[in-house]
Length: 321
Image (cartoon, rainbow, N blue to C red; front, side, top):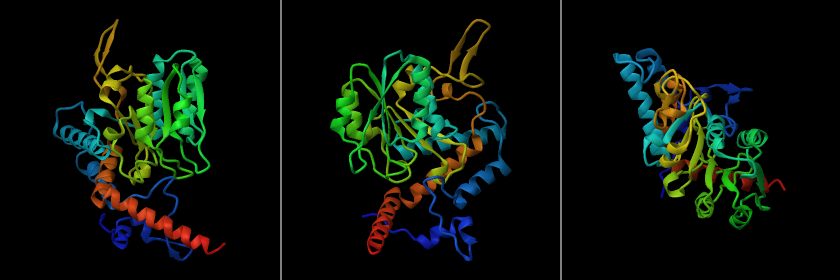
């Protein structure tokens, strides 16, 4: 059994929901595009700005140490939220789109003309366009997986699409249009049996149900902060540790390097090798607060409440027919 949510109390945690639109209390239904922010997120970011802000992993002074601790605590929270094996498997990005571009540009360096990438027809543009760039640049082949009449992925059809040239399957964990949830664990098993890596776009999936990347077994999982009640400009990419260690970086700058000389450079270990320059510090702290807030409410309880709302909406809509 999941605990019941006190919806009135939760509404009170969102300052924006205190306003009226057209003379009525605001009911915000555009969360699939971007969610509003609870006080927990606003307060965490304000406290960091007002009390301890500094750059991270660069200084020895008090503020730098405090901010670095808060920044890395957010990484640990993201790892807990996704049930990653280690915080080192979490890369902070500029968002879900940036996370998928990271995989395309880094893993894509190892791909050659004729290598295949499987996408489904229900992918968001953020999980289509980066692969088209790779197609144009390196001559990889995009293979399209259709969905059933119910808007779902058929594992048998997925298996049939895999060939000896298939290197990656990049699939939505949950469609932002249809709401269909992909059988991620089964698809990962099928792909790995053929030596194919798997990336899931979790920008919707991470919001609407528990995600366990260890149980799924996927190689990559991308999520964005602003749909998870966190700030914009922040997301996270989960990558299996051994996969990340084998991937080259594609952005160059401070902190992603270990040694810089006139005739060579060496790179830091993951996750730091994939983040060049100053990261989105305040945004990461805000994302950590958002994930803590969600886990505090109960991810299963939130999903159960959403399902009840959907059932109620469908029942009422059927009365109109």
